Length: 430
Image (cartoon, rainbow, N blue to C red):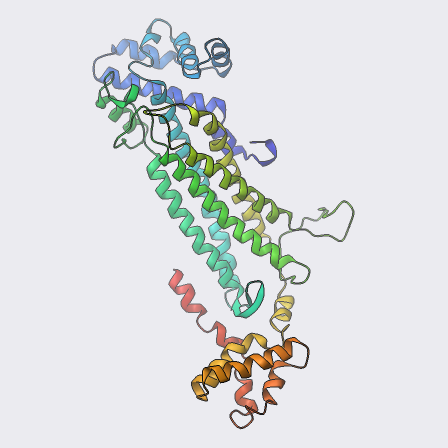
């Protein structure tokens, strides 16, 4: 990941130093398991545990000659130990170490994402509670529909974040799995007891069935969960972008004191953070597609997945973590223009109450639905065309004069009617 979008916490997890350190932990856990089974002398194990270390520089030097990353790693570790280095990697194949270490790193990354996700959820829910009863216009197809509350928008986001938390939890349970079963997964060179001891030490589950690798549907599920998280963050960002448009001006992402919006136009206050979130969501979806391409490998394994995973795993987690931090900053610093929210509620001159008028004519006044619809729609279109106020047009419509008086008609133009069950929706969320 380029420095611009990397976070310190996620970069540390996916650093070469941490990767090699986790691989070393796997190798040492295997040595301890062999010692428990009596295959490595205890004094040799003590020697291994005291001396074993790994240098990224030395691994790179050996790999330049061997063109094999795990052989380079094992050789570099063995050099630091000496004679007892021969016990390192006993009975293993490369994927035993790589896949088990990757599971540890993926779990570490998911924990970091989970923490950021929880922080964002709290921020969104705080905004929902703050604006629980603030009426605003709801829109469908980009057009004014009926009143709702701003709090309900935020609550809807919080509910989706809860589903993200659940999806990522499931993905973590499926990826927190180790694999120490040797070439093609037969346990021929290392018994299942080795795998059990190692996985227990690393807090990983045992695989049900694996071949030479852990099957990549597990990893694809992780990337898909991240991509869906990105989709949800993009939905939030897109809504804020629309609400920040000059013609709407209801909600604005934060704008720093010395921030500038345009190199040419000093008046600009652009939603750049939200736009950045939307762009990053596209990357996550692309990485998820690559992860799904990695599922179908030749026979018991090939390495066509390996090169892509070196990119898509660290980049996906870095992007997702950056997006969560960005979105938390956006939500915390949102500027809400209540005057413009009310102005937009009133913008159509009452057209947003058309359904209530329609249903009143049908349910209370017993008009045929088609007749009632024609009356309401014709006056709505006239109001849209600038012929007058919707309420006034209805009031003066000859077809309604004998059916409904002004006070009864006026009672239908009441925003509180649309927010009366907000408490129920919030309680249902809990």
